[in-house]
Image (cartoon, rainbow, N blue to C red; front, side, top):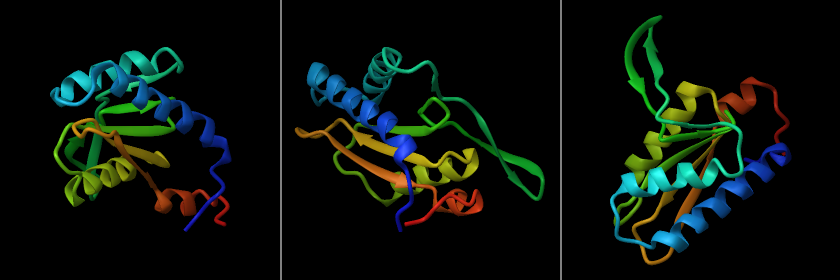
Length: 137
């Protein structure tokens, strides 16, 4: 499925450039926390709003049952989940998708700094896209 994400492309392009800037300066081999903090610093050079680990309630039948804390939220438009692992797997994907659901944010980027080549994947929140009546291509 595709949708008209032209309003978001400039934001995601700048975020991806920030991924490469951090990776070029630090390279692989550090713990996730180092990349997370460096990425927040880099993103704040370009964006007015960069939130780190903001808490969102997870509700069941109208009652709070847990909390989700996405790593980074940029301009309330994109969630970034930062990893420093040998391989991205289905658990990492599921974590990001659940964060998209709980926040209602439309785009999520999963980035892995641990490999010799930077790795990132994009995930779209099609549930919210359809609910908001955004145009699907």
